[in-house]
Length: 106
Image 1 (cartoon, one colour):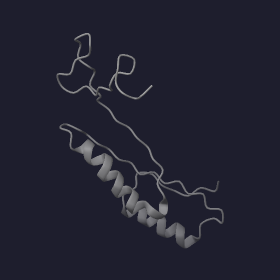
Image 2 (cartoon, rainbow, N blue to C red):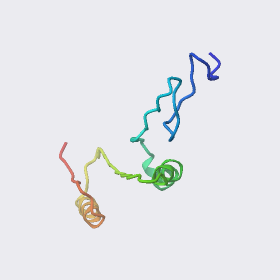
Image 3 (tube, rainbow, N blue to C red):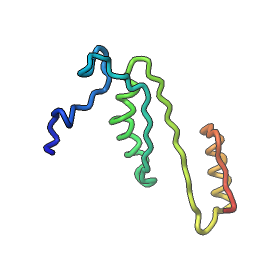
Image 4 (cartoon, one colour):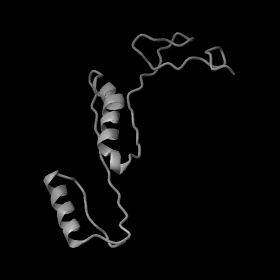
């Protein structure tokens, strides 16, 4: 297989307006996208900017697109969290209007 389009390896079609398959029927429109990626917490700014530039920008540029982005944080704290860290993180989450946050014993 060369990767070139042919009868057994047709080109991928993305349902552009007016596109039709070999039977003359319109291709279904791709109406939803989802994606998840792990990012380096030490490079969050760089990675988030790259995701915004290379993925989100293309989606938000589509007419009628409703794009939602959620950032989820999971942290295992081998030594536990100090009272100061708990106060600082909790206050920052409240200020940043996190919908859900908290510390757990396990």
